Image 1 (tube, chains in turn blue, cyan):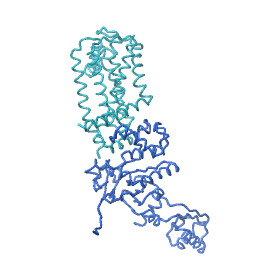
Image 2 (tube, chains in turn cyan, orange; image 1 turned 180 degrees about the vertical axis):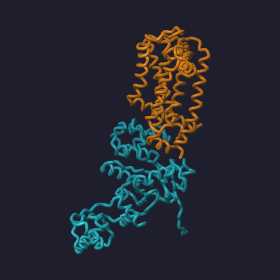
Image 3 (cartoon, chains in turn green, blue; image 1 turned 30 degrees about the vertical axis):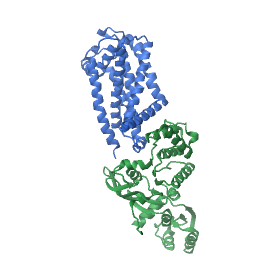
Image 4 (cartoon, one colour; image 1 turned 180 degrees about the horizontal axis):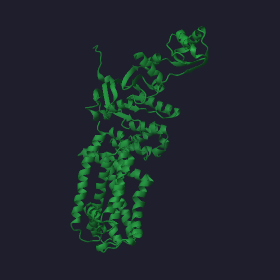
Length: 313
Length: 258
């Protein structure tokens, strides 16, 4: 039978037209989203773009004003209990008890998932090992570092071995090393078959982890693509040029074929690889534009939004 | 039936969590153990010499001990508002809400733990009184009634505290409730005889719940007949519980509904 399946069950998470307002503030203005089973989708956006609101709707903590969403094949509005049975959530705020030890926290949650006493202890032990917290198991969580606390939060979300995991800015505020450690934990979860929706403000994080990146801004999706395609669109590197004379700016713009602000001594443009860089500098040289300073930097979230909103305009 | 057992298990786990937390915070240990003893000593030695017990003819320690019990238990019970506000304003409530448990076990866990802690606090206050020379003369049934009444008082104040903790949006504001509960006994017949108060205060003292509760505890502890104050006390406490529990339930549902 050559039937092409387009069943919703191939997507572990799927949302259509989600809107939400708090009072007069429109937080979501129509979010469409799909997370294929077994993949990691990153929801990338700045503060206040609606990432957390989207996650709260998908995890049944908040009802949308309009739109529909299914998680694990269950409707988030009508089948909240069934949704909760298949998901784990790590939210931005601490969702573990700082006065209890790591082990006590995990045993408490295992108990509340109705594992028996011995089973709960074993599950807690497993998770402490897996998330590299065994050495700190009997210390109060209040004494943990930021990275350890996030790992415990993640472990707590995995107590019931959920098929679908929601991670709301799991690495915000962490130092680079803790971030890298958490990334490797997330990769392991993904490799073991967990479907993950992760929100982040960091383009690099989305690039490192995600199969697909959904960029949201102002409560709507502005891009939904693979990290590679997104980076192609945004440009791999940013070239920052400071001109010796600001009045050369229009000439530099003409030589490079990009519009620039007149009298702007500093230009920022996307470059695609070494050849493009050389051509750019050659072009300026031929046009007689003196460059005082050259720098290359990786694109930031700001560049992504600038690029995407410029493309839309 | 298994649903009931499961909920009871969930409740027990949350009560254990709460008691563990309390044992680890110095403030709570002070509130639950040191403060009852200090208040008792303060009243008996500092104020006791200057206060006459009026027409009751009791020694001051016999007069004031029940009010000190209520202050000791009530203050800790009122801090239940802080515990629930902590859960509601932090991320804990999100974690609990994604668990397969009835939402009501979260506030109920705080209330049950509060009853355990604060009845113990009353025990410390009573032990201090005995060391200071108080000699209760209650019957076994009388002791059972004292325990029941103190537990009911703590239960009522804890339920009211949960309601308050759900109403306010910060843990600081939640803490304010404890002052109300701590001061109420001063404006009753518990600390000084209400007959010595000016008109308006006297009327308030005679008609607020602390006065009949204190009178009942005093009579039970001294092995004397309780009279009508017992019924009035029970009606007050039952009233507070019957009003605050459903209102708190509605508030909790509203704060946690999607």
